[in-house]
Image 1 (tube, rainbow over the protein chains, first blue to last red):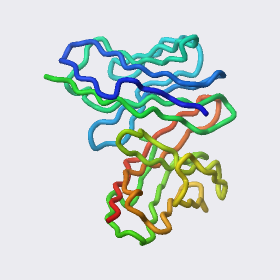
Image 2: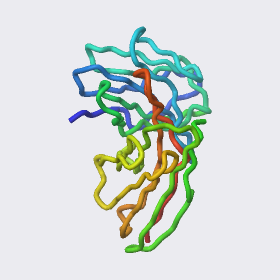
Image 3: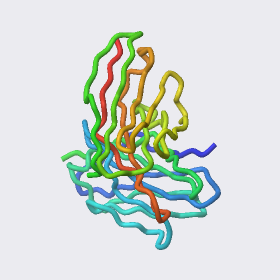
Image 4: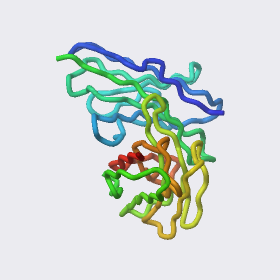
Amino acid sequence: AQSVSQHNHHVILSEAASLELGCNYSYGGTVNLFWYVQYPGQHLQLLLKYFSGDPLVKGIKGFEAEFIKSKFSFNLRKPSVQWSDTAEYFCAVKAGSGTYKYIFGTGTRLKVLA
Amino acid sequence: DAGITQSPRHKVTETGTPVTLRCHQTENHRYMYWYRQDPGHGLRLIHYSYGVKDTDKGEVSDGYSVSRSKTEDFLLTLESATSSQTSVYFCAISESGGGQETQYFGPGTRLLVL
């Protein structure tokens, strides 16, 4: 069965620190990849997405992610976090074009200290 | 904003009572989804729909049923609510076409089953 792993469940950083959140998936075929952010008490909002082409994807709010096919990874990065980035981050995968199911990781809670 | 509303936004009910949650979209998207979000589990798919009267089960469908009689509405019913169904429920739509389908989420419904 397809799965998505987010190994960091909780991350605490100081403002201006760099961020990298890991995401690994298990599926050997073509994938569509997504990162969502959920601010406290709110719904999930799309940060960025990858379908094909340049494996380095830029999203909103200064976030980017890199798709490394050989590692089945799609890690999220931000060079300098802000207090307002405190949120929960979810990686999601849609496996190929023959399905409309999306598989989500369990999320990473990020706390940024001012 | 993908034009998704959910009602009610908050509900408290008692074990054994039926509960129906409504998801409404304004943009005629074909695919609609119901997820539940629980700490440590991320988002888990309950049911999804790929058209009017066309639905399929997700990974945690036991105890839930759905109906879609109109494109814009997707209903989730808990036939006899249990305390294990206390959760936050999110509806999502998927834009379709072109191989770049992306999910967008509604604001969520907090359900407490006593």
